[in-house]
Length: 258
Image (cartoon, rainbow, N blue to C red; front, side):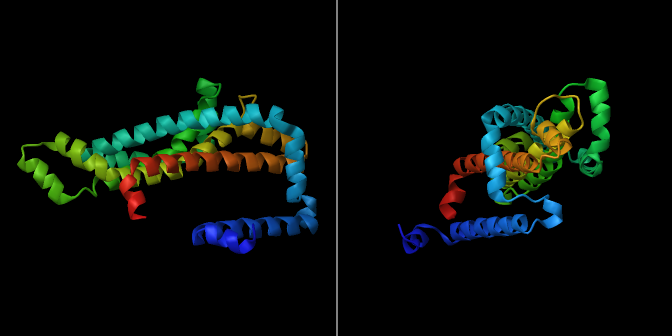
């Protein structure tokens, strides 16, 4: 298949993505060839060879552990965010308190909270806690915005038929909030992975991408360090892609408009 046929099969957005990846790889290869920063930037083929040599025996268990911690944090953080967002809409007087708590969770240096959680609970709790905290603020703000974007005419219609706040929420507001909430969840998925990896950095666990990344850095194994960073990026991208697929299935009208 020639390049002309490939260009015909790909949309402009896909072509831009392919070109961007190719440019990134070219820059990466150039930095590695020039031994920028004292050789701390290995070439892409060196990193891929190291990843192949390490194999699933290294990446598989650590990938699974981090993915499970991120998934738990994603579930807990987003569930709490959505519940609080609904309460804010149903009980407006609590908005100030909930908003302040959300801002506090977003602005507090979570690396300072992690050691405290580790001392109190131990185990993998800091991993789940930080994963949940990293995705809480975005989802709550997105859900509140979506709930408040409900069509006023539809709300008036439900009210005219005798529906109260609960009926308006169930029949109109929750549906209206879906696009914003799912968009926030797409951002929250990579954030949960980041939180889980940072939680593993704090110690108290013996496996996970964060642990393997720390071990590679300590051993001055630069290609393996980059390989683990790529594994983390792949996990974050996988989380984003899965939520994006769910969004396309849950919002067929948005797909039709696109």
